Amino acid sequence: MRSFARHATAFALLFIPATFFASISFADRAAFLVDLAARLHRYGTTAQRLEGAIIAVSRKLHVDCEPWSNPTGMILTFNDPSRPEETEITRVLRLPVGDTDLHRLAETDRIAEEVMAGTLDLRQAHEQMSALDRPPTRPWRIMQVLGYGLAALAVAGLLRLPWMDIAVAGFNGLIIGALSDYATHRPRLREATEAVAAMLAGLITALVASLIAPLNQNTVIIASLIVLLPGLALTNAVNELTSQHLASGTARFAGAVTTVLKLTVGAVIALYITNLLGLEPWVHASRPQPAWVETCSLVLAAFAFAVLFRASRRDYPLVMLAAASGYLIARYAGESLGSPSGIFLAALLLTAAGNAYARWWKRPGAIIRLPGIILLVPGSTSLRGLLSMIQQQDAVVGQDALLAVLNVLLALVAGLLFGNLLLPPGRNL
Image (tube, rainbow, N blue to C red):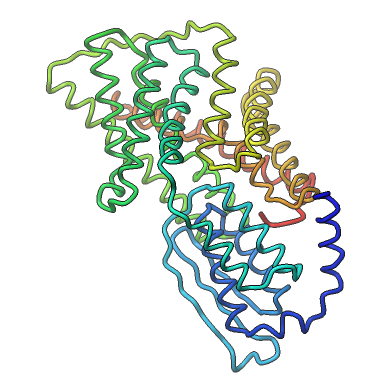
């Protein structure tokens, strides 16, 4: 039934006269586009996809639009094609850095499609988009905090760390999730969230390693901070640069590097405090877990990222399948062809799968694409390299880490680019 409705809507769209949207005031059409662009930005859409989506919608609404997007703002210029010299409107928007929200992204995409099809007027569209701004409920916030803990626990399990390491990482993740929730409406704390979170994770890990049992210290700290690591931001930045969105890509890359620096500063402060207290953490490199622990951890990680990406409940199975598929393809292909080749193949196939989903189900391909690469991004590698370089005071260690990050980024971006060539996206999101 839904498939029939989608085809009927697409068929009807072919016969909507140009005067249908021309009868709506130019100011109302421009205001809708501004609201739509701001929401796509807020829900984590990259510059090239956001600008492409806004241009596509503006054409259907018979508005000439020139968008320019960067991670912290947008400039939108509108003209009425029938009166280009009389109706120019320019809007400059200062926006916070977007965060992935798959449910709201999918709903916003649906609303835009229905507006373009003529089945939803602009007043109804504004009402439905405004309904997405409902403040989060207490159970939803609790689930987000639990998502941090589950993600840290699962990543530690994927690395086959000892049970004590897994437990400490999971506990640290819960603390960091609670801190992130607490900082949401406190601007000063929000600016320092990454540094404070890394300091707490480092202190707890060092105390446990000093007083209770030896740990894989750096690995536990990194697993604890997994949700805050900017691996996805780094990948999006390089992707924007390759698509010639140089200003946005450079700004996003600088933001990701700054996040890594803040995390490193927090962790180093924690280790320095431990040293001042005269504590000596026991560091023991051990990966003793059997294969079934990794399997269970992968399922748990997929569920945690479905929660953290704020997917609709009906999309949980799809998001979890995408996350698990990306990890498994990268791992087993990497064992045969080498790690970069495995990452490239996973990114290529998941990008093509996301494009196919967008093409045939008329929903954002990001529902598959983003979860599919989240366990492949190089955030943990960058933090580990910087931590090791500072601890050992050895620039060679930093160079090796930089090379590892570069290899992962190149493989991911190549997979994204060739995935779009293998099956071109039918839509921008």
